[in-house]
Image (cartoon, rainbow, N blue to C red):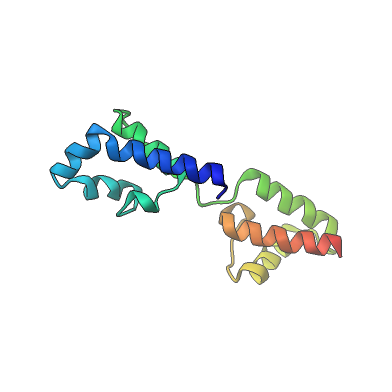
Length: 132
């Protein structure tokens, strides 16, 4: 986290802790239940996006934004498939699935079912193969 991001995060925390909603919820011992919607026991464990989301809900917005999807993005999938076409001898999707299994230790039926972190690992390995 950059210095500017740290400062911004501290400002967001200050806004939350001085907000009338926070004071009311804390007085009624409901703050912990409210934070459980974000999967945290304390604001200190939340990131910048989650803090912004929390403030929006405290200000009366009805539904918080959903958390980012766990699955790989379209651009990650596209990058995996395009690099695979360049570096692989067998460019079939089946071969790619088995390559992904080798890297992630998980077998998927489709490339689209990859998780974001695993897609990042696969991309790193493919880029190393491309540069070799």
